[in-house]
Amino acid sequence: MSAIDDVRTRVDELPDAALVGLFIFGIWVLLAAFAFSVGGEQGANLAAGFIGSVTVLVGAYAILTLALNLQWGYTGLFNIGVAGFMAVGAYTTAILTAPADPGSAGVPGFGLPLWLGALGGMVMAAIVGGIAALPALRLRADYLAIVTVALSEIIRLFVNWNGVAEVELFGKRFGTGGATGIAFPAPDDIVANLVNGLGAPLVAAAESVGISGPNVVNIVYGLCLLAVVAGSYWVLSRLVNSPFGRVLKAIREDEQVTQSLGKDTRLFKIKAFMIGCALMGLAGVLFRGSAGYISPAQFRPAITFYVFAALILGGSGSNTGSILGAATFAALLFYLPARLGEYFPTFGTSSPGNIVEAIAALGSLDVTPIVAYTVSNVSTLRFVLIGVVLIYIIQRQPDGLMGHRNEPAASVDLTRPRAADGGSDDE
Image (cartoon, rainbow, N blue to C red; front, side, top):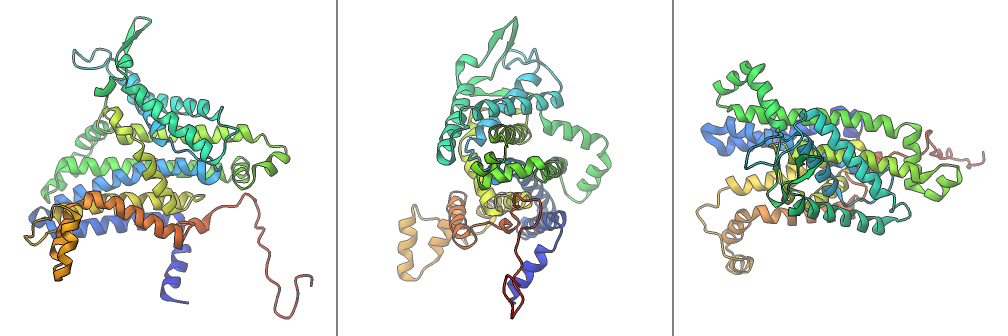
């Protein structure tokens, strides 16, 4: 057994919670080391900023990836309208919680508490998901994907429409704000009030070592998102290991066989789709609406691509793989390259105007122009990196990082043991 195989065996033996925890902790250590190496006297504050921002990203994408894994990984429903269902949850929450009298510059809402608005956003996202699933029950694979991506764009264009920017119904004025968006109570502010109130000693201790209060708030908000991830993981694990979950996995393997066993697969698919959409709506509130403001530009189809990339990396059909894939994508492929572009030195070399000039310098064995160009444009080139990593994963490990933990539909182990040496299978 090679060293790599030995490490992988040891990793596979770890409990799921320990595996996820160690992976996220390793990301924190990596970012902290980078921050101290480039931050100088501000290294501690820079490290806290890095850790807080990446924890928020990891938490948000983990919720989205778990939701998509329920739909695609466990049930085989190809939903590429993730951004649209996020928008439904976020806009419903914003309309329900925006102040009834926001002033001349704001969009009025119903003034409900944020927790009640978030619950309403989840319910509305689930209802829209159920409505979307009804006509798509007879569609599979790419046809279902076309329906969901079309619905996502319809939702985004609808909330962008000035006709619903502010409307009046039964004497009550509310709306989406159109292209300018809508403001509502920020989830981040609730955490900030808690940290600056009960957690004032923690903030004071952090400031004594050079870490600013806003960075402390950001870290705590990220940890709150990880707590939501843990709760979602527990609920979904209980769900997919129940008889209901075994039917979902059976639908993924062969829907016709599942129907022949007397299961109403249409109802199961609708339920799975609605639960996943509810989680997507919650992520829309906590992620895109964390600052208390949303606009249509925040819900472009690229988000769906990011979530699928995370699920492919981690391995569909595995909740643990979903979280690890989200952490890998958000931290190592999306966030870290952008920070490298900001802080990595180019040794005084100006960046060439285009890639042709950068490559041309290689003819004279001068690599500094291509290095300078890469560093200066790393925020754009990171998408090339994501594509390269996805191609590698699909070719070399198509099941993803944790795809080997893909759960079968059967409740018992159906693996047939090999016959002992010198015998046959019939003996």
